[in-house]
Length: 574
Image (cartoon, rainbow, N blue to C red; front, side, top):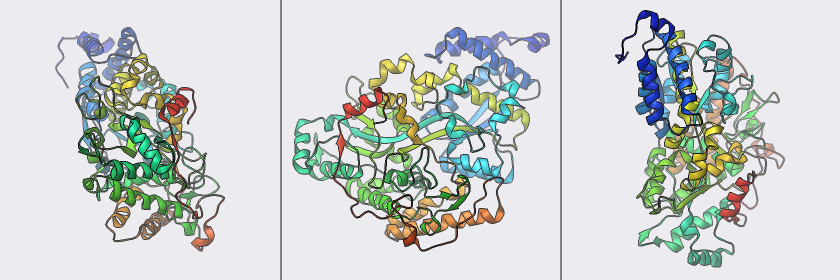
């Protein structure tokens, strides 16, 4: 525990906060936590509540907590700055470890299985919601806030202000996780290049339609070909029509599990994830909860024509239109590459990388600080239909295990509320651009500075944001099933297997996990595999798994970015 800068008597400690704590809160509010959706007076009241709650925990012996999160800018800010602020204000020390997401998921899964206490709190994706609901190892926050954690739940938490709680709520109607940061994968492009009259004329002469934001994968491919093979150089530098990553690494799995198959159109209609077949190709029974298979033979879509098409296009574009080094990059390696100024567009770009692309002086930013790039909804594949999931949104969320000692759990819950509080969240949103609160998105700061973020603010203020969703409830064991993807996709990248063979192997492996879960049982909605049938007879035109299209490359379609932006401003998805 830190040394206080003032001395307090035992009587004072029992009744009110030490003045040094209040002074620390005031200092942090004035020097760091501005702007805020709260007034400074309201911020101080909120911090006083944290001080008082922390004193109750200190009286029970709590001196420090240890929490963990994945490696992105938002969590680096929490670890380096907010943990220090929390300690100075409350007297409870925080160690917030930051690590690659794959390592975090493995550690969390091990703790869930063994019921061992390793961290007091975890920030993990809401992609695990189906696992948390079925395994019974995670604290249902809805229950905790009304029960054991009631006295440590901030009266100003305002859950209705959070934009992602629908994604952290399971089929039982309970919220299992508290959103800490959110980001979507969108289409990214160099708006300055797309606006050039000479390039627009050349593109239309070759393809017969306007150069603009692609609405389908055909247009994306045409634009990639145009910049890579027609334009070739801009301002004396080699340019590429596409950017991606392909290293044999766990992050390669996210490239596909984060809704790539549904962007191609492999899933069923239905927001957030497609029912009965979701974006991983997993089918659930009529109860909308019991997984019954991933392979086409069992009614799933993981190895369906649309899924194979999705993998095929990924491979084609990576090899034909991306920089040669992209094939050996991970998620973290590839994210900042567009900032270097040689990429024309990227179909699958995470907005978590927005902050690095706004830095003054980089090739992708104008001299006045405005971006040369813009973001828009990613185009859809030929199997996609209106009413399907539009794309993926990551919701990194505070998660607490039942194996955590009660006082440590309460202290970690206190810290989780601190880093998501209205006092702190707007400043954190400015740093990391991973919005969690409606009040932050609508704040005057982002109204005045929207032009710095290339469409991100307009996207999050529009109804479009709810059509970009995390992995859903159909996935019963995210850690085990997510790790299947990257080895099988890698076998297609290396040429060891064809796209069809790779997806066949993946679907079989997913069915094997479902079968194992069926044997061992789960607390709720245990998988029950459908019998295998002739895959050819399972394909239909009425729902997933969809029958193979005769023409998988229809004519390219684009839209002017200004029209798209106006639609968002008017409250339309597109």
